[in-house]
Length: 326
Figure 1 (tube, rainbow, N blue to C red):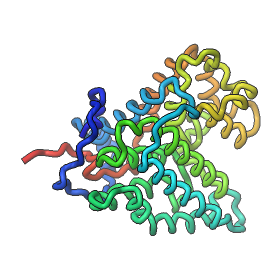
Figure 2: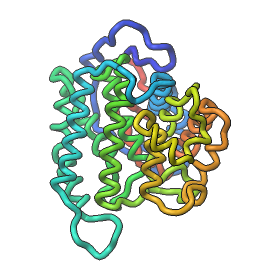
Figure 3: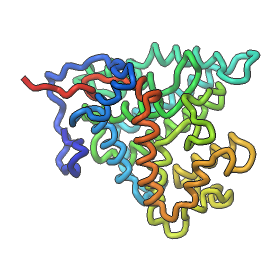
Figure 4: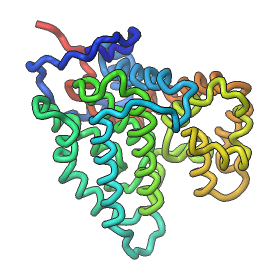
């Protein structure tokens, strides 16, 4: 397929995946810490290389661009936004219940049960009929991307499942190379809005939070892509994101600032105390340095951490074992 992240994307349209592809239901493969080696050293083109390649391709695609930038919106992108709008509507239809504990509202389980039941139907609205066989495999990543219904928590592992969901749609040719900007600005941004609404409505706990030492309680990718958007900005520097006025005036154009705004809405007290890592990052001189540092941090703190990756599921599109030919 021409989403080959190790070479610059070609200009030809993607060819459809071979009809002989055997799709499988993704499952957990990393059960113990030593299993992490299978993931980190998985030979190309296996899950880790493909996943990080996908993240970096999108990182390049949005560099220096505002959210309000004019970009092409394909039918597949429109359908993904409609899918996310459905999830949003279900939140409205499932109000929080009265319960003694403030956090982890049990109504989330009702909302999740609906997604669990409907996920394949939702994904089938995005995937053309000739690729229907891929639906059960791809739908697993959608279900994994909205939080855990037992613990009523959400974290970067769930966010990674959504990126994996989008990566799989690229691998089967539903999303094309020229959808890159729309994948981040339209689909991922809509996903973030729905996740923030879930987090607020059901008072979800952060999953595997590092507390004050983590970058953010819930997300990571919008900080990476959001810092890429700000590279070479004429006047906004990293030091400006701790300035309330700069954030209020520019958050609609930049994902990074939208994230900061959400944090300041949700947390009280001095920024340096509740978001120490981000406070430190505001001292970095340039957005390109911030971007590079966040990519390194993402690999170290999310993709190479057992508590996060033990939940990741592997199938035929994001395999953990090299596919042997013959």
